[in-house]
Image 1 (cartoon, rainbow, N blue to C red):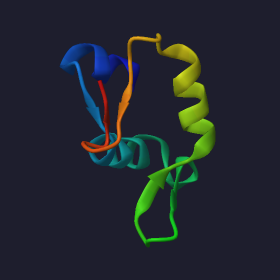
Image 2 (tube, one colour):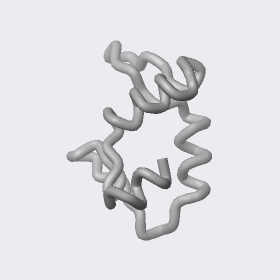
Image 3 (cartoon, rainbow, N blue to C red):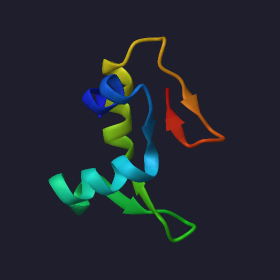
Length: 65
Protein backbone atom coordinates (compact mmCIF):
# COMPACT_ATOMS: atom_id res chain seq x y z
CA UNK A 1 0.00 0.00 0.00
CA UNK A 2 2.76 2.41 0.93
CA UNK A 3 4.64 1.61 -2.27
CA UNK A 4 1.55 2.34 -4.39
CA UNK A 5 0.96 5.57 -2.51
CA UNK A 6 4.56 6.65 -2.98
CA UNK A 7 4.49 5.95 -6.72
CA UNK A 8 1.07 7.49 -7.46
CA UNK A 9 0.73 10.22 -4.78
CA UNK A 10 -2.71 8.80 -4.00
CA UNK A 11 -4.13 5.43 -3.04
CA UNK A 12 -7.79 4.73 -3.74
CA UNK A 13 -9.47 2.38 -1.31
CA UNK A 14 -11.51 0.59 -3.97
CA UNK A 15 -8.47 -0.26 -6.07
CA UNK A 16 -6.17 -1.35 -3.26
CA UNK A 17 -8.96 -3.34 -1.65
CA UNK A 18 -9.18 -5.71 -4.60
CA UNK A 19 -5.39 -5.86 -4.87
CA UNK A 20 -5.22 -6.94 -1.22
CA UNK A 21 -7.98 -9.50 -1.72
CA UNK A 22 -6.33 -10.97 -4.83
CA UNK A 23 -2.75 -11.00 -3.53
CA UNK A 24 -3.25 -11.92 0.12
CA UNK A 25 -6.70 -13.47 0.40
CA UNK A 26 -10.10 -12.92 1.92
CA UNK A 27 -8.75 -12.84 5.49
CA UNK A 28 -7.51 -9.28 4.91
CA UNK A 29 -10.87 -7.94 3.74
CA UNK A 30 -14.45 -8.29 4.92
CA UNK A 31 -17.97 -7.45 3.80
CA UNK A 32 -19.25 -4.39 5.65
CA UNK A 33 -22.79 -3.56 6.77
CA UNK A 34 -23.56 -2.10 3.32
CA UNK A 35 -22.65 -5.37 1.62
CA UNK A 36 -19.40 -4.02 0.17
CA UNK A 37 -15.86 -5.26 0.63
CA UNK A 38 -13.75 -3.28 3.09
CA UNK A 39 -10.16 -3.51 4.30
CA UNK A 40 -9.74 -5.34 7.63
CA UNK A 41 -9.03 -3.06 10.58
CA UNK A 42 -5.75 -4.84 11.36
CA UNK A 43 -4.46 -3.97 7.87
CA UNK A 44 -5.47 -0.32 8.26
CA UNK A 45 -3.90 -0.15 11.72
CA UNK A 46 -0.60 -1.52 10.39
CA UNK A 47 -0.73 0.90 7.44
CA UNK A 48 -1.31 3.87 9.75
CA UNK A 49 1.78 2.89 11.75
CA UNK A 50 4.08 3.12 8.71
CA UNK A 51 2.78 6.24 6.98
CA UNK A 52 4.03 9.69 7.87
CA UNK A 53 1.89 12.53 9.13
CA UNK A 54 1.79 14.18 5.68
CA UNK A 55 -0.45 11.40 4.38
CA UNK A 56 -4.13 12.07 4.99
CA UNK A 57 -7.35 10.22 4.30
CA UNK A 58 -9.64 12.03 1.84
CA UNK A 59 -13.12 10.90 2.88
CA UNK A 60 -14.81 12.46 -0.16
CA UNK A 61 -12.53 10.70 -2.68
CA UNK A 62 -12.07 7.59 -0.48
CA UNK A 63 -8.30 7.70 -0.86
CA UNK A 64 -5.08 8.48 0.93
CA UNK A 65 -3.02 11.42 -0.36
